Amino acid sequence: MNEKKLLSVVTGIVAIVFTFQLFNLQILNTWGSNYSQTVFISNEEVLPGRGQIFDRNGNLLVSNRVIYNLMLIPDNLKEIDTVEFASILGLTKNELVNQIKNALDYSSFLPSQIKTKISDSASLVLHEKIWKYPGFFLEKELVRDYKTESAYNLLGYINEVTPAEINQDNSYYSLGDLIGRSGIEKQYELELRGKKGIRYFLRDKFNRDIGGYSDGRMDVPAQSANDLVLSIDSDIQEYGHNLMNNKRGGIVAIEPNSGGVLALISKPSFNSDSLQRTYDTNYFNSLIRDTLNRPFFNRALQAQYSPGSPFKTLNGLIGLQEKVIDSASHFVCNRGYRYAPGSYLACRCPLGTRNKIVESIRKSCNSYFAQLFSLLVDSEKTPELGVEKWRNHLISFGLGDYLGYDLPIGSPGFVPDGDYYSNFYGDYRWNASSIISNAIGQGEIVTTPIQMANFTAAIANRGFFYRPHFVKKIGDTPTQINYPRQYTTIDSTNFEPVISGMEQAVLWGTSTIARIENIQVCGKTGTVENFILIDGKKTQLTDHSVFIAFAPKEDPEIAICVYIENGYWSSRWAAPIASLMIERYLTGGTTRSYLEKRMLEGSLLEEYKKPLLGDSFSINQ
Image (cartoon, rainbow, N blue to C red; front, side):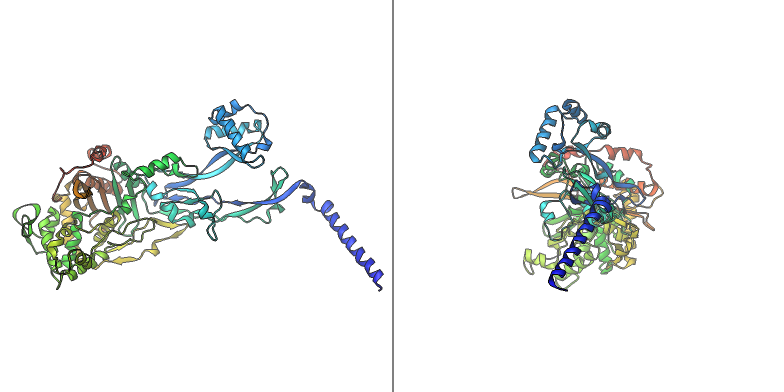
C-alpha cells in the first residue's frame, strides 16, 4: 500500500471514531444531554454522626441533634419583605440588611451564613415560607446534645478545628470540622468521630447542585462512629453534682471490683453546650478570666491537696507491713506528742490515753501516728533509707504519679524521697522529727482526689486495685481487659485492723455523721490545714473538709473521696455528702432527708468571699 492510500485509510478510521464518539455523547449517553448545562463535577465530604455516649445503665448522656443555619446566595436574591423575614428570624430589619450586605461583600455566588442555630419554632416557619425568599436556604447541621448538666467536666466539649490543626501533615480535618477539646470528647476523639465519606455531584453554571454524579457509583460511604458506654452511674453523678452546689471541690467514686469510675464531679464547672461550634465568646472569656472558681480546672483530677488524716490509714498499713507495730501495739497520747525540744504535735485524746491501731484510726490520734512514723523512718540505718522504704509502699497504691486513667488531664501529686529532704535540709541534718507532719498527711506529700479514691478502693479490696477508668465499652467491645489487677506491697492480712478502725470511726468515732442504717460503712475523716503564701508570709485560710469511705465492709461496691475546699471540719460537709452518695448508690434513695436538705441547700459562697481566715484551726478529725 502506497503512502497516499495509507493516509486515506488512517483519515477514514479517525473520522469513524470521532463520529461514533459524537453519536455516543449526544444520542446514547443520557447524562450528557441531561446535564448539558453542567460546568463541573464537584465533591463534598460526608460526615458521620458523632458517636453517642451512655452511662453504665444505658442512660443517654450525649447524643446529636439537628439545628438549622440560614444561608444566602446573593446572586439569586430578589426583592423580599425584609420586615416580615426579620421578624421570623428574631432580628431587626437593620440587622438582616447588614447581614445581606456582608454576604454580598463576601461573594455574589457563594453561600454565606445569615443566622446560625435557628430556633425550632423559627425553623418550622421557615420550612413553610422559605420559597417566598429567593436566594435563601436552610442548611442542616448536627451538633452535640448534652443530656445532663452534671458531667460537663467529665464529658468535655467540642468545637471547630483551628487552621494549625488543618495544616498538620496528613490531617484528617477540614475547615469547619469539629474536634473534642476536653474530657471524654477529646480522649476518645478517634472512636467518636467515625470516618468521613465523599459524595460526588454536578454543579451548573450558577454553582447550584443539580444531582449526583454517575448514579453515586464513585461515592465513598462514611463509616459510622462508635458509641461509648461509660462506667459512670448518671444517678449518683447528678446527685453528687447537686450536693456540691455552691461549693468548691472534687468528688470521685470508684467501683472497687473493676476500677470503673462511678462519679466524677468538679465544682465549679462550665456548660459544654455553650462551647460548641459558634460558642458564646463572652461566655468563654468569662470562664478564662475566672481565676478564683477556675471552671476549666478539674479539681477531681488536677487539684493537688494535702490528704490530711485519711492518710493515716496508709501509714498504719505500712507500719504493720514493716512490723514496727502489730495490732496489739500501743502508744501513749498525752494530748499530743512532743517530738523534739519545744516542738509539740497536739491531739484531742485525754491525757495518758493508750491507743492501739484500731482505736487510733477511730479517734484519729495524731500522737499514735507520729510515733509510728518516727519508728518507720528510724527503722533503717539512715533517715533517707527509711523514707525511701515508706515511699515505695505509697507508690504501690498509685500515689506520686499519674494513675493512667483514660482522660487527657491530671496531676501526679507528690511523694517526697530521701534525696528531696537531704537537698532541702542538707545531708545528715534531718531526721523523722524534721518531717513529722507527713505522719498525719500534712507534710510535703500531696495527692489528688482520684488518687485518694483509688487508695480507698485498694484498702476495700485488701491490697489490690484496678486502674481507674471511665469507658466501659467501645461499640460492643468491653475495655476491662485493658485494666489488669495491680497489687500493693501490703499483705492482705494487714488490712483488717485498719478496716476495723475505719468501721469503728463511722459507728462511734470521728465519722458518725456517715453512719447508714443496715450498711457497714468504713470511713476516715480529715480536716486539712490550709496555708498559702501572701507577700512571702505563710498565711492560714479556712481548713479543707475531706472524707474517704467504702461500703459495704465485705464485698465493697463503692469507694469514694469527697474534698471540699474551705469546708471547715470533715463532718460538716465532706462526710455527709459522701454518706448520702453511698446510700443513694446502694439503695436508690436516702433515709435521712434532713441531712440531704442541709447538704443540698448549704452554701460556702460567703466563705469564699473571705480571703483570709484563720479561725477554723482543727488539730485532728
